[in-house]
Length: 104
Image (cartoon, rainbow, N blue to C red; front, side, top):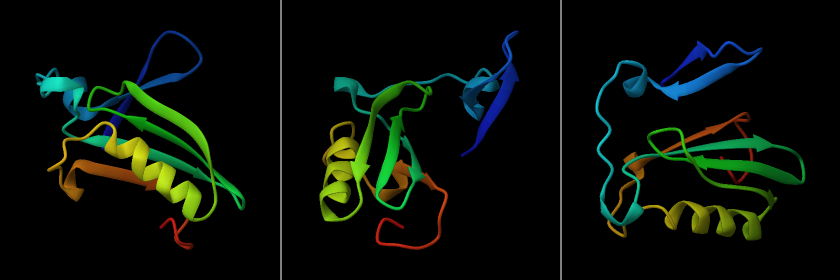
């Protein structure tokens, strides 16, 4: 997802977007809306563990969503709550570990 890991002195890596790693400025839009959202989906047969982050790597939402239409509807609500009404698909980057099923 265009992120760089860096050692934090602990036993794990801190993941940050590449533009923050390079010290580039981050300009956030008004009203708390994100310019780009990063959505991670840990897929399972009957549910999806989802996390939504903004450009700075700040967690905006996290949850376990059911498989099927109810879960997809909730995913759209989670994403839509953090974007402007006129946001385009290029403003949402999704990472999912499978290549099949209605969520893909």
